[in-house]
Image (cartoon, rainbow, N blue to C red; front, side):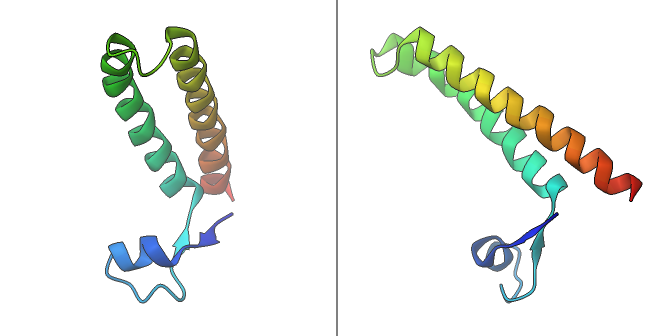
Length: 79
């Protein structure tokens, strides 16, 4: 399923009233966020802003979200 998201619709140039956020959209967003965390967390760890353990946990959580949305997006393609 999808959810209506005004901010995303406005970003894409839509009215925001009827645009749907699909599981594939959410998957792409989660992948971008995972890549961002992988790029930024090492600097934050080095700067003492984030512990290595917390960083590993946060990345593992986002990897789980990516896996979940991969399954949901694949299911949606079959329906």
